Length: 171
Image 1 (tube, rainbow, N blue to C red):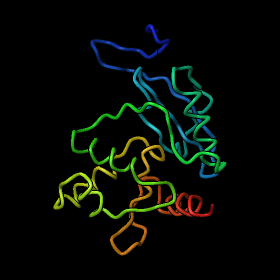
Image 2: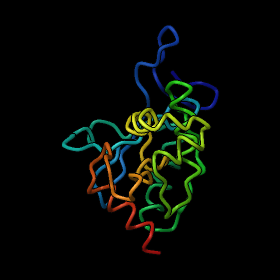
Image 3: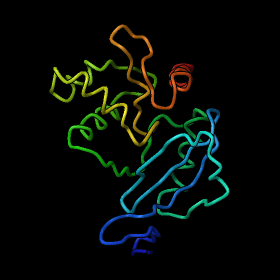
């Protein structure tokens, strides 16, 4: 289905069955980027996938997203200005919004994020929302560390988290 904005996903009974997607090569591996008619819905590493040859979709936001990710890894971009279409609970969205406020090259602990969303006792829930972030890098969950400053969990792997943080602080 192509809508007035040129979005070409497949929608049935208001359910999106297939979203346009593309791939982007990075120093950390292949990334798959998906969108819907409102913005980027997913950015994740495509470990072990052979999907690259199946489709490199045309969408409203994919080319810009791919360019911005490439600029980020080339250390020419510190912030993303592409629309995101976040799907999750209101709590998760509040955490993800707080993550987007963490400046490039800086980190925050779970407690600081909980305080930022005005829910001081929600550290564990913040950790779970952080873990369920569907739009890696653009929603910088890699910038969240343990209270002691140590690297803790990252859905894409702790080595990637370390790389991203070192890349951001190398400037």
